[in-house]
Length: 150
Image (cartoon, rainbow, N blue to C red):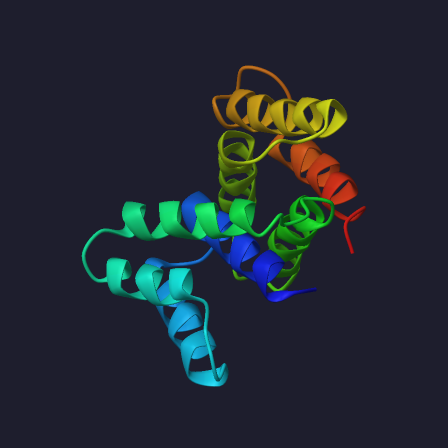
């Protein structure tokens, strides 16, 4: 995976709440330190992180599109991150589905993926409110869905 794709994954993960703003800032700063000639946009985003995170995210988004970044594997990597964090018990089912909901806002997903995420989100709400279904059943459906992305 190239730098442009890595930056885009980190940008979306931060926008969705998967990664922290501090984590994004550290990631960008590490790029600057590691590269002999870091892209200007990365330096600009690093400076913006300290002032306005939304500006930094916008700069990184523009960096992705101006470099003709490929979206092919971005969504799969984001789903893998959620799966890994869930499987390692770093996040709960509620957190994972919250991140999936945010992915709907931040990315262009396939219709089938959108339908699955909406089903999980609605199902979790209904189960938690004791309106319909059980949280355990939604958790099993979530595990089945997220296990596809390795």
